[in-house]
Amino acid sequence: MGGVFAEIFVRQRLIVAGDAAATAQNILTHERLFRWGFAAELVPCLCNMPLAVIFYEPFKVVNRRAALTFFGGYCLTIGYLIFRSTFLPRVIGVLLAIEGVCYLTNSFVDFLAPGLASGALALLMVSGLAEVVLCLWLLLKGLNLAKWQEMAAS
Image (tube, rainbow, N blue to C red; front, side, top):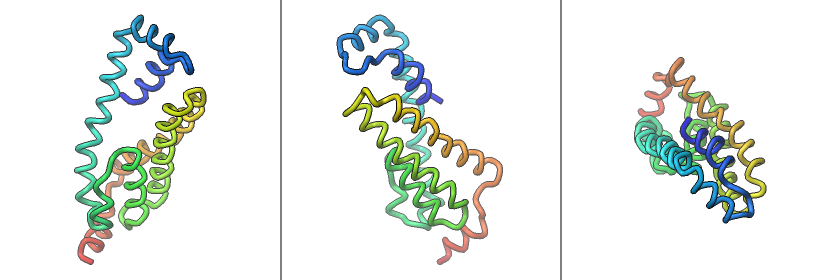
């Protein structure tokens, strides 16, 4: 949620594509909003570090090296790991891999072509549902423990 707040309610209001002076003025005028957006963006970043450590343990049986990642790349990698595993639905892996591509695309578009950023953001917001699906699956169903143990034993 912090990333959504920072992207939609902060960046979209403060950044003026192609006009650095107007963007700087907006940041100065709305300094508190800019600071809240920055802090909100840190929350998911800080949460993703322990999440990577938490997910390392079950997914090391799929591919130990690929289980060590960063976020855009992390979504691609965790998508790959879930797809290859037998203890979570493959469709969640595919959705997360798509989200990873969208995260990376959004990051590059924001930097290289800011005028197109709103379109990239819309794509990212839709693909962000993959994280919600994964969270709900883990909360409601969890891992298929028998299949995880089978994979760990091999």
